[in-house]
Image: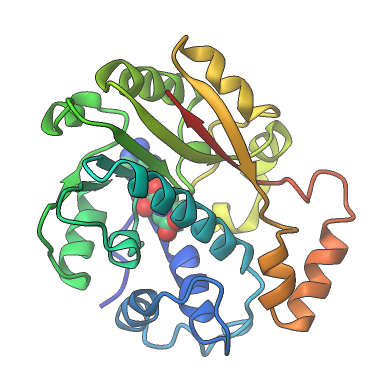
Length: 271
Ligand SMILES: C[S@@+](CC[C@H](N)C(=O)[O-])C[C@H]1O[C@@H](n2cnc3c(N)ncnc32)[C@H](O)[C@@H]1O
């Protein structure tokens, strides 16, 4: 089975999944996601055979996943009755990695064709619902309970949405729930502007639609929204401790270039 049923931006889930699969093969993985390795093998049995196929060059994406996992775990420890909105979930196995208690209701949302692939590759579980919809068609929000704390996670999603859609999403979520945490990642304006020439994005026939030089300022969009903090990615201690030496060298060099150290910003808000 291939991911040929996916089009445009939906295809961007595979490089992230591949990196998570390759991380799991490190002697001491950063994320340690067995589901990613298994799913990647089924999606593309030769994923590790091609040129650069076994290179962990994209390992920073795994750091991003781990940062989102760590924040999610600490939020759920304090709010075990929360509703989780995991938006643009792709084939990520976060719900299995975190394995929340039965008091948490978890929603994974992505385009219908991605959700269809998930159904084939990943097992069902209690208190876990799949929603096949564009995140920008906010009618999906009517399908989730609103009377509990919410945890909204958007990993690798926001750059593919316009700033108008991101604003609409954040304000609607804050308006809909009594309290919660929102965690997402953004790219800077330069990365958005140059994304039409990015070879990987071109290959998938997509590009970024937003960029933010100061993602903390997204909190200004709603009076109840408060910026909390940012997690490191390209220079994170875990990457420098666990990535193979050649990959660490590449990141050290890359991080010397202006803008590269913070070419993705992983940020957390609460309300
Ligand atoms: C880079 S992938 C990240 C996937 C997953 N979050 C991960 O980290 O492995 C981006 C994902 O966002 C999804 N996506 C992009 N725009 C979307 C939209 N408007 N509605 C729903 N999903 C969207 C894509 O289909 C894809 O699965």
